[in-house]
Image: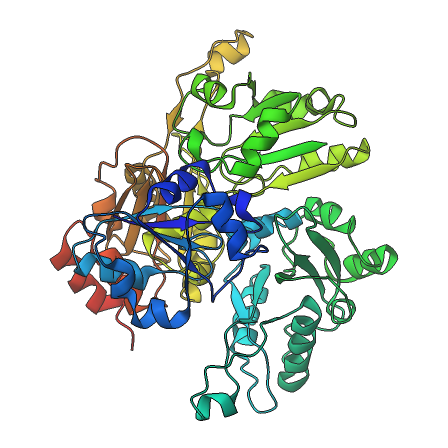
Length: 284
Length: 284
């Protein structure tokens, strides 16, 4: 049996009791470690599980899935995923491969950022499609997120923006020379996301949002030091939220007063927030 | 401190290790038991936690929140919610009241149906806003869900439909006579949801979907006997999915071949599924 086990969002104690039982009994335990991260080291997980953990990078999962699945028709293999196994990054391809090999699979759900973002007090019912924001370079500034946000905004919905992480990336030079030297990991911040959003609005000029549009920044959702801020995109483009992981929600106009009451508590500037709300968001 | 603790989706073992630690130490433990249910009895939870659990019905949460919060400025109170505390039903009002009373709150996230539905293999990125389906009566057939689905469908997105549950409801006669006698609980099935959807399309005739539109029915997500089926709304209106809770996803047209490959596995009629897909969903 292949078990896909969600680890939740923050640290080793966010695994479910059901998931922990599976991990303790599995013959091999893999940790998917390239699309998201827990806020603790692998060693801490191993100590908590009482088991060795094999880190599965992108190469292993995408090209070496048969190694992961080896023997899983007879013994149990656990594949650990930060968040939920079918959340922000889905592992449907691994399950499809297991099916081809006649291996049964079971899924152990857990908190995903796709639902955990509800901790902002914004109603999950009022979210449209989720978008991703990648690190811009000088020459590559993909803006398809803008079209998706536009679709959400036109029907008044919030948009969750998931922020890029870069782990185990090679520089172009090291890649060209075949040197397996990796750059330090990078995690996009709320400030950088807000800046990139404003840069694209500046370029496209379709008025999907403005520097005064309200948004919520979230850092380390579910962790004891979780941090939430509410403010304009302009304000958020300068905010300091601390350690990763960060996410951002752009508010839609179909927003409820209860949502306002909830997020006002962590507004960067309450007077500005109130003025902005009254101008552009107040329910008619 | 008021802790809002997510219980996940299926049984007592779906609580997180972090959540279980909180429950074991809290002075009082409440279980919110009117917007969703676990698939186990309260007694099983109490045995697992080693603690008494107070069932909080709608009346207690909505009118008696100060009883729940009593003393939470000094001692720890745990408020348990099936799924995630800010998932399908949010408890922002309880947190707002705690804030007014100067009581700190902490949230322990868990799997919610809003992300757990990813187990269908449909990408959460491709979902629009979530809708609710209530039990129709002879005289009351609210159809606002139809307008929301229409908005999602116009941009090609999937729609998660959450199905009504009725627990601790009084008949009109018992209510009129002030008798605290409650009807047996009722949980909407996938079949009933699909039928009601078709009934409203029949009435509104806007072509948002048809009897041939593809959908996925999900029962007991996250439980060992989780069941998924894919088929047309017509097929789903006759399907038998077993015990609660059920959910339904109406497919959007902006659907990926990987999603097709995943859900085809549990299609009620694979030949019909393929024909339907080729006709209306195949990517251009």
